[in-house]
Image (spheres, one colour):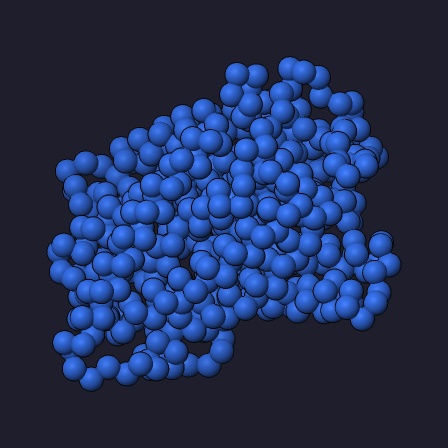
Length: 454
């Protein structure tokens, strides 16, 4: 039976518009893969190489294990609530409006910052290729392009995604070919080095610290859930797309990072933020470095497209139910059927990409992601085991054991983040609590919420 979304403040009138259900499984998978960016492995490659002691693929395997369990939890909750809002909606419906708001607030942290990190690396790599043009020029131009495409609508994004994925697939094939050729010509290579490390660090502590940062690479499956109101047969297509995207991207991340560390078995980079250029030069010289820049920038642009689309829909969901100002965030464009005010808000915030650092952005995105992932794992247990009393042996495995493992792993990764990240992230969460107190007039009024009725 389909669900009708009804606001506790009243159903939206015709002027509010409706999101269009136009996305099937292939488009959703492409959306998630472009959001993740297959080449995102190189965004924090230098940073995680130093943090983990040269064990990036091992760190990715740890992150992938946690993400598989969490992706399964997202798939379970999409079947229960196939609406926009992602972890915000799932936590709200399972634990109440206040907890849902804080989950949504944590999501805002990584969703607002992810477009920024894409704009930042676009400016970084294009400025390296064209040093005569300031990085901020490329950042502002990318923001303008992404904003226009998002305003026009999700179909335009899906079409752009196909081209971007094709370019990255061509680059990956070229990198693999030239990379293995370079390894074969270099003589003795230790195939276990990317898992045992370069000797600079040892133990599981540095490995999990690197794995925690790499959580930002997997936000694509979460972004798919935000498109539930624009998906055909959301209860089937969205869960399938989430699981396919997580497994596919995880294998690509492990494979690319493994090859990269065989090609360039060192953490001595000219610039840790653009360490990928050292890897490409070692694998294929100037040709591959230029090709990488083109493919990576196109991927970052695509990720900015999809990440801005996702956060705009989260802002729309929160505005639609009155947690954020409804008159601004809770409206859709009648002409384009897209949340134009929310899209423009994200674009303005993204301009901060000209001043913030790559390391801080990566860490803060992972902080917000792990909070949201933990909340969704717990939401499965609350919704199915406690509220729905699904307690057969099979149900307990599906709805208690698997999400329980996912929660334990995400919690472990969360505690592996740097002290700076935890402090800044907790300040962000405290600000969310203060805003909620203001909205509810000191918690004397109920938190506005979506009423999802059969």
